[in-house]
Length: 351
Image 1 (cartoon, rainbow, N blue to C red):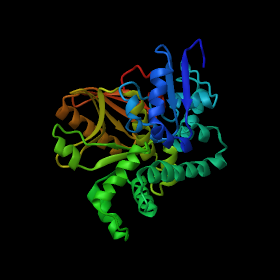
Image 2 (spheres, rainbow, N blue to C red; image 1 turned 90 degrees about the vertical axis):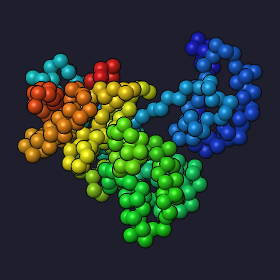
Image 3 (cartoon, one colour; image 1 turned 135 degrees about the vertical axis):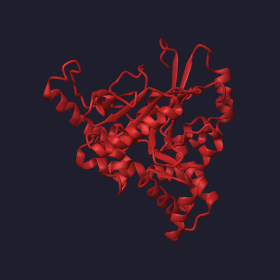
Image 4 (cartoon, rainbow, N blue to C red; image 1 turned 90 degrees about the horizontal axis):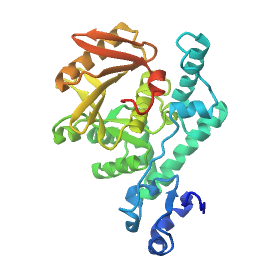
């Protein structure tokens, strides 16, 4: 025990985590009788079994949960010991080349510390081992899923799609001769999300029924999984950009803020991210790799302008590969910013 910091740190390995629940009474006794009130206790672990849903009842109401995400881009730069002079980057070509190279590495392989520090030739193999562990430990064993082949098929469908609905997944799996009911499918999806591997993004609507009925957009905890495991999006920069922005948004928002996506009634126009704080829409964000393509730029602008008018929000941002400027379009000011610059912005700034 560190007597200066007055802190106790417990770290359980995965194989020990189930015994936490079994030793609940002893833990309660220890906390109540053995630990002075002026000492902080930190219980850490790498498994989703450490989530608030799994914490023993004696700890509920007495604990705060802190989720640890893969490295942010700023943390990635520190890990790789890449020093960027941001004050001079606008007019020093070497600095810009350096950060764009770092961004490409981060975009492709993600921010899991072991992957960041490993040699390129080993990265894919390590990611695949992580993936097997997630399937086996955090999803199958934890949720009592016996048919692992069905689970793997579902995960591959999700990794190769940008959105899904229960009905669409059910029909696709059925057509591939996987026997799985809709209730079981829902259980699998919940287990995948509870493992922190997958995040769902619901459509923005003031009607809860619409939010639940429309397809959900799916994002993964780290770009390395998308790059290494998806056959469709492994080199799709647009998908990798959008997944990375979602991860960063999740890192920046607080408990009063929600992320959704938006589509118009005819499903012709879309905005990638609607940022809502309590009941107010505070920002609309489009993510686009090649904004210099005229058709792409027209599509992205059309969507965000229409959403701006519909949702009464004038804080409009388009995150892209290289364009940085502000344009007034249809009476609305639209800000364009390169992904690397948005990623290194101070967290205290607005998302």
